[in-house]
Amino acid sequence: MNVAIDIFTIVAISAGAVFFMAGTVGLLRFPDSFTRLHALTKADNLGLGLIVLGLLPQASGLLGALKLVAVWVLVQLAGATVAQLIAHALRRKGPPT
Amino acid sequence: MSVIQALDIGLALLVLAVAGWTIAAREAFASVVGYVAYGLLLSLVWVRLFAVDVALTEAAIGSGVTGVLLISAVVRLRKTEAPAAAERPGVVLRALAAALCTVVAAALAAVVLLMPDPGATLAPEAGQHLGELGVGNPITAVLIAYRSFDTMLEKVVLILAVIGVWSLASDGNWGGVAGPRRGARPEGALAFLAQLLPPLGIVVAIHIVWVGANEPGGAFQGGAILAAMALIVLMARLTEAPEIRRRWLRLALIAGPAVFLVVGIAGFAIPGSFLAYPAGWAKPLILLIEAFMTLSIAATLPMLVIGPPDRPPS
Amino acid sequence: MSAAILAGLTGAALVGLGLYGLLTDPHPLRKILAFNILGSGVFLLFGIIARKGAAAGFAADPVPQAMVITGIVVAFSATALAVTLLLRLFQETRRATLEPDAPAKTPDAGVDG
Image (cartoon, rainbow over all chains, first blue to last red; front, side, top):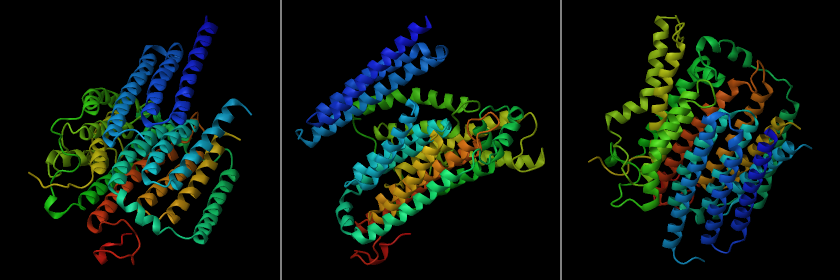
């Protein structure tokens, strides 16, 4: 049983890491700020979500699990807001270059 | 080489690379953004040193609050960058400076490598009376009990910094308001975050102060989170900062050191020396001091970030 | 090489980097940034002293750690004061430079510490 849980953790965290990697590649390779923003927010939300999902079975008790979920929710909230703000600032500056 | 070692070396190289970028970046704005990332990476190094309390403080204050301060300053100083670039010292002078700095860094590195292992330590002394204090986190014990004098004076330094910042206001603005003005129609996403986040942030901050007695956390980290909540509300222009002549604001700024001082002087009367806690009363007194210190830090940090008042009192 | 020694060496290098920026960058805001990097390098050196002082069941000596925590807060308040001074200098002279002999609109307002 423990082995199954550990394998689940490893698989979920690895999948999360792949999403982070994809987001980073997008950040470096995409042509303009809007698409870079897209790469970062989409990949990081899902990537962090998978990592938190993988860590949940390893958490110490209900409180630890709740804290992990809270971290995920807060990062999503902050990430979404910052993405909105950056996009807004970019639009005010004119068309993407 | 184990995986952990490889990760450590990678982290160290990353920290140095981002620090180098911060120094070398052409634009000051890029440099500030680099500094914020550098602070967050540095807090990972602190976790690797088993200093989670320091990591929390570095992430919250060293990177977060300092970042807000520097970003707003760099935007206002953008016009001064080009003239400053003309003052850059010549190649010879820079090479000399580089040589000097290499010598300093090499000397420090030699000290690190030659340091005795295990080194001198005060850990047994710090851990000796934790039970009597009712505190499980030795760092909280050092901050509020064994070296409480330092911590109290550090609060006084914060107040002096606020006085210094305020004293740079123009005469007409004295007693007035600093920071962003209240917006007519607060902007979408940030206003939403500023309405949603503070209740959560306040709960998290109180939690961090409370668990700080036994686990990583404490007044500095909790106070920094409260300060961040205040800054978000100000940046979203939901409200303005209070006028600096307000009595309640000034009371909040001095509450921490004042309570510290009262407890300290009471220590003369009851246990017999300054800042000594009477037996059995240590834990409640520590919680009392921490609560007021949190309040003072939460009031001081935003006032330092938004700077001197720039419009007169109404 | 342990994580602690690696962090100590990183701290030493950061002190060097920060010192270089402080000496060579002419812009005062960049000098403040460089000074903060220098300071965090010094804090890391405290960190290795704390880690080497691990004893009595603690992973690190709490006394240097507590000093670093107060240090970070004091460094922030000094940074805030310095940045405010700089902004005020800019507001008065429309320039931000430490050069005393550069042409200034108000000749006596161009210098601070």
